[in-house]
Length: 322
Picture (cartoon, rainbow, N blue to C red):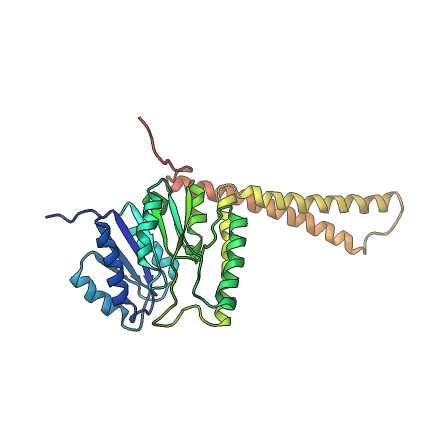
């Protein structure tokens, strides 16, 4: 008898959570079986060193619906999500953390909301059980900034408990540390987003991977830099000449204006401009502007080569009525 195709795929990146795995499996399967729909659980072991893989392997032997992807080393959450998305077969892909701070009991609620016609349903940790200074405040600032920059307004980008339609995750490519920006990245293909309040629990076992002020600062810097990347991808990835060309025209324009001013001083007023720092600045701005425009033109060539070489479409079709 052939295996029934899953309707729900749960993707969980995991790193050194050996103490939480048995309870995570128990709670998750209890919820999924109660829904009465075929499912699969895909766990990406991100180079764990505490015996997590051995526990996962035992669970897989008992329950083949649990698929385990083992990385050779620690690559980060984004790689875990990307590997899970690539192998997920369900119509709905659920993402969550392995530390049991996300409550599996919220999954039916999120999927029910998604089936109302949403492509992405994000969990919102209204009552978050984390430290105020190192987790809550930086998170609130980041959520506000991400919403402003990307135009996708969510209260809680950092909540891993989300539901995606398969068409969303199959049409995006993740790299770096863009896992927290998946709804924003997916907005480039056109999506409908909803947000649902979810339960958030304090960590009871194991150690947080983001504990400590140093890690908080490092994480904040990475979020800001990744946000610049996302902004560029959303606005200029298919038209780099617009950003580099605009900057080049501004720099060149300022340089030309400074040059005209110095020319007026030389010819009309008879001033010596050979030793003026303003002359050097004018020349540098014109050169910089031309370099920016050249970068934009090279970017246009590279973008067209990328799309044409891979036969990659510049649009994504949601549905066709024929």
